[in-house]
Image 1 (cartoon, rainbow, N blue to C red):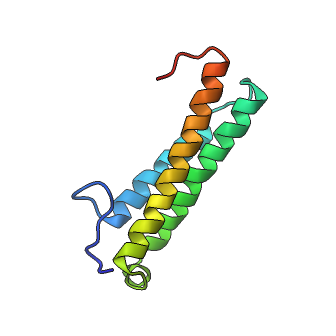
Image 2: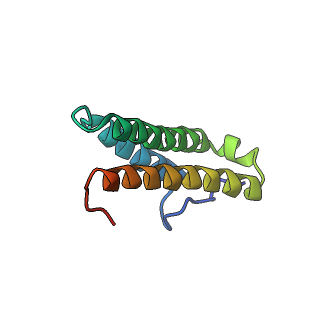
Length: 105
């Protein structure tokens, strides 16, 4: 894949996108969940891990030589796998939150 391949947000570079996701993950790490129910803490850590894995993938993809080693379909598939994992772990966080009385949509 060429150096001009851009991630989901039109107009951003892989480097910009990777930095944004890294900052988001850092902010998520700063949240204190220690007073929340144990099962919620576990689900939250799994969700955070999904985001961390995606951040690491994007960090690798900042290198145009690394991106060129992938076929476009393979890169998109890998990116999609990360999105699926993030969405699934988020749904688990929401479900557990609801089971403890949180009003989430």
